[in-house]
Image (cartoon, rainbow, N blue to C red):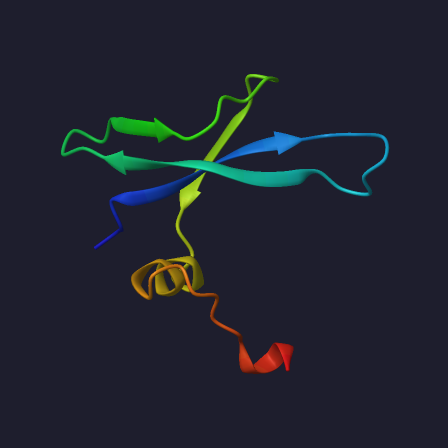
Length: 75
């Protein structure tokens, strides 16, 4: 079953950045009819939103009270 919780990002493009920056600004929930309820913590000044399924790693961090989880590959 697909997760009904999704992350919402704004995409920041700049000549000073090598690639676009995705900044998480909210969460979205999928309704039974596949429509979305979107809750934003910030407003994207460029009007651009990117909504995608939460990654398992993000969900693990949230379930542990926001404490960052260090991946063994990063050590």
